Length: 75
Image 1 (cartoon, one colour):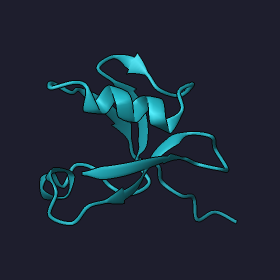
Image 2 (tube, one colour; image 1 turned 90 degrees about the vertical axis):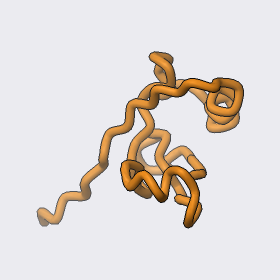
Image 3 (cartoon, one colour; image 1 turned 180 degrees about the vertical axis):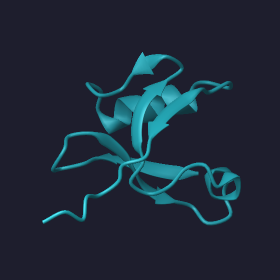
């Protein structure tokens, strides 16, 4: 399992936490800070985290589009 939140700086929906030992943790494919872009082809950028959770919970077959967010070290 994982939790999501809206990033207060970018407004993007991001992975906030990965539950140790859960499916997301075991897969190694999802990381804290990854941006959630789509769930089953539905863009989520304009949805509230609660709406996205509803989509995730009510679908047996999920296809999730994530984008890894990298922080710039440039000054």
